[in-house]
Amino acid sequence: MTIENSPAPLRRRGEPMRRAVLAATVDLLAAEGLGGTTVAAVARAAGVHETSVYRRWKTRENLLLDALGSHADDALPAPDTGDVRQDLVQLMEAVADYLASPQGAALLHLGASPDAEAVEAERLPYWDARLRRGEDIVRRGVERGELDRDTDPRLVAETLAGPLFARVLLTGAPLDEGLARRIVDLTLDGARPRTG
Image (cartoon, rainbow, N blue to C red; front, side):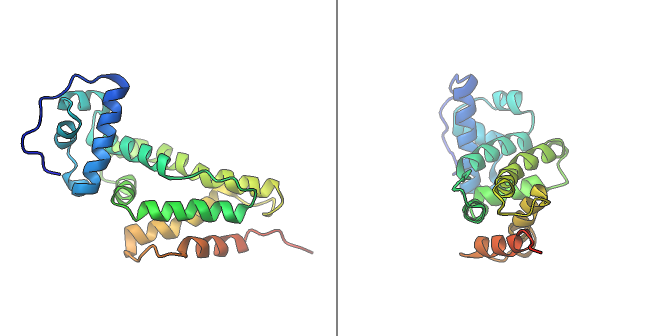
């Protein structure tokens, strides 16, 4: 998405400016990757002044996290079918699909990078908010008696997400069809109520 003759920046402010900048950021990530998504390129694509972007987000990393976080929130469901296994499979399939996209891979790499100090301050709150979706599903499963009452919802959510993150960040193995269901099955077998 190389922009040769960009139009003069528009005088966007507030929420319209934010939406335009976030959309441009997500689009550039898909077209140019993490390296090609600079603040200057985003500002040109959004039709705003570069200083406006810096004024609002302070750093490129903050901008990327905001754009990708908003995009991920829209892409990931919050299923509540009444069946913990089905809810977790739906959520993890959506996570796998998202992580297979350029935006999802960029989000994971950015959120896992220990190099950027600006990201470091946002890392824990950011991932905490995303893991809560899985935790909420697990809690409902515990309340319905589908899972053992001593089940640790955070640990289950981390256990489900871990293999997907490892494939994107470490091994490069494919996020193949059926992987999410296999991870959920493997994880839940250890969280079922015990009889006797």
